Image (cartoon, helix red, strand yellow):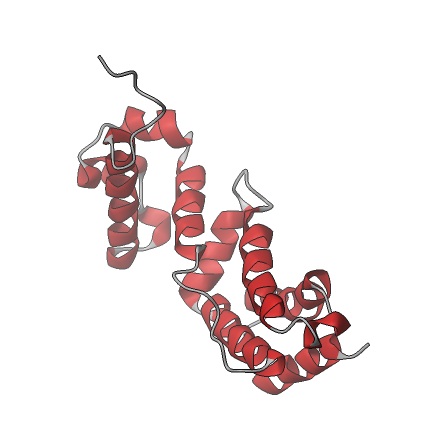
Length: 180
């Protein structure tokens, strides 16, 4: 008899998570966020509410988990052939995604989660990929500098302003990040 080692990929746990995440995404498309409840999600996902509470603890944690899953990039950042071009393409995409209604909701959900470093980890990976492409040009900046000069103002404006960071200002911040 074979010994089970950990959770099987695609096993029951993964199916429950995907079913619950899918139910949350569907319900958020159909109705106001404030009216979504754990019993509704459970019914849609075909699980009991206790399954959701046992796994996620509460609705806020579940919404944060769904948001964090959506934040995982599907692909590497665009490769335009230059560090400046890659940073502009990445920065504009990040700005557009985070200043959308969905992006704002995801950032708020993640703020309520128990994984505050999760977003930094994703962003660090994306920015390191870009910097690694151009080792000679990347000597003038760092991931921390890019986060401070590009990500932070973009996220701040997305969360606390009625208008996103203007693209021209984003480009100016990228230029500033590349100076040393």
